[in-house]
Length: 287
Image 1: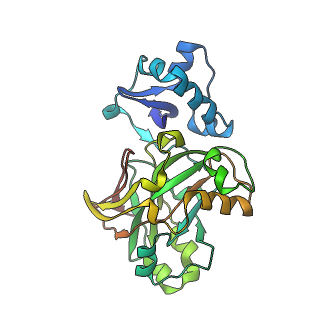
Image 2: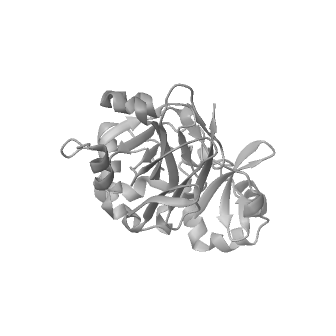
Image 3: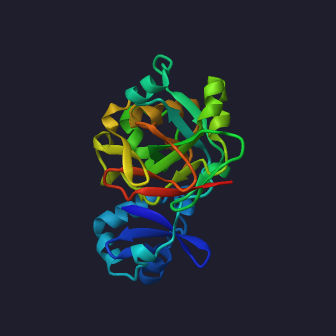
């Protein structure tokens, strides 16, 4: 199942992606007498995604496909949710990227950073290059969205607590970070420095994430491409690692690292391409 948040009349509403477009959950509720939450944030907060997906897989897909849909070309797709409880990132998780940065992660532990909710934008929204920093980069990454409240999750159980995966773009003020590695957090926290969407894809649709390709593209051209199997820290490891430190909550987002970053200038379009996912694109403007 593929979920999206679609802007209709100024409100962002949960929808299921079907062949003919996006079917709003409120349309499904009206047709079937169900009472699913009307937003992706609500589905996550109430831990309904797994139940909705089970219904979808057990015959619901055909029912959704028969309902009125907003055509893909006409839909204004927003980020899956606006205020994730936590927004974490993993740095230098691909060997080639770590070598390019001359970075060695601590033995057995990834490099981590957080971003504020004010950094969040969605598909088609502008990445705004702020005043001050001189070199801003964008990185394509696989995003994990947590679907259940959990702690001390074993790697073998990690996929059970994931609501879905989504393309993400992580922006960095690279010149700030270059001054001192301790400035990593500051370099990541500017407004519009995190984008994700357009769709949240449930784990059953992508049972082998290590087989995905991850591409950072700029202005339609692939700049970096690799397979997720080249991650130094796997998706199950990342979920287990964070859950050992803190309670993970529905809607938490974790970025998993990039094969490479591209410098941004006004007029550019940054893009994240994940195999099997709708691409994420964002134009670039100056503040």
